[in-house]
Image (cartoon, rainbow, N blue to C red; front, side, top):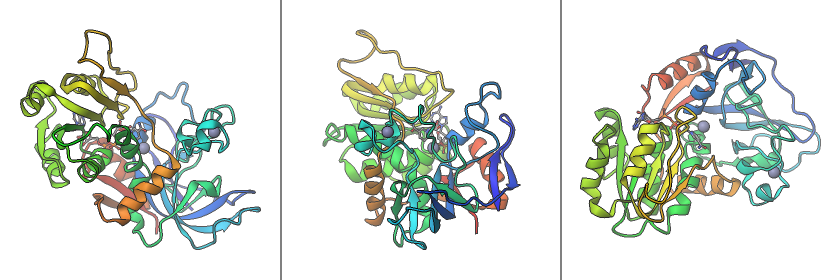
Length: 347
Ligand code: NAD
Ligand code: ZN
Ligand code: ZN
């Protein structure tokens, strides 16, 4: 079968012919119907070869939707032919976090060498993929695979990031979204649907700002040296109640801390260069600001996000690619030429 693999860090991924996997005991084989490309893939592709954390070659893709093609021995909870979305942050299933559905924070994953598909084991950018446990599948019914697959990360991650701030985002408040890409454009829609807040989106080009307005941002501001002053001219002296940074480089983290108001939340979702950080101390930000850096989301939250999609409140912008053109999808992602999410459709 065909698969898009990372072969050598620092290089482009490659379309390669690989062995079609067979499901072992407890596993499920999916015929992939859609796979999403995330900016985190680009981060991984550019990690130094020395000390690279994953076995190579590795099939990319931590956003996957497919149809159950075959089940391993002992699997009787999913039937062949069922259309499913993959919950990607696999954990052990039994530790304290996993038992709450928060497998993204499994305390034993490293010790047991459990890794998400596409981020440690072969992922969804292929004709078929292995899912380690039927627990990691959510039936999607008649949802469109192409528009649904980004929800497994570009939907789930912003949802998990926004949820803890919902109680603060009451009438008269402002939420700021930095980066209106794959994750950010879904975050804007979630904030509009789940809160009465004014939503201000920041990005680097007029085209991206127009996209942010199309998906629901009330106001947009260029993410430049004047961004803090320009956002504050909209929020007034109270500042923003919640800021979600889907970029995570030092300038955007500084902007986030610069626009947040007293008792506000700063949530850093973007990985940026992997080293940027928020400086927090008594005199450095307004009183009682909370700063979080969450990772992905819980199993039950994925079900909630898919329910939002079923309710018709999420319109994910996708650009479709065939598996043969999948490498081009990663080129466009790296060049920041996408509008929404790149989705690879194998068939
Ligand atoms: P993307 O490439 O689709 O979107 C990034 C957006 O940010 C683009 O619209 C781009 O124009 C904009 N941008 C770039 N520099 C900016 C700046 N200085 N100011 C404002 N906007 C800027 O990326 P994505 O797939 O949405 O991922 C976003 C980030 O989130 C990445 O860093 C990714 O690695 C990370 N991520 C984190 C998690 C997590 O669990 N924490 C999960 C998924 C992705
Ligand atoms: Zn991702
Ligand atoms: Zn666990």
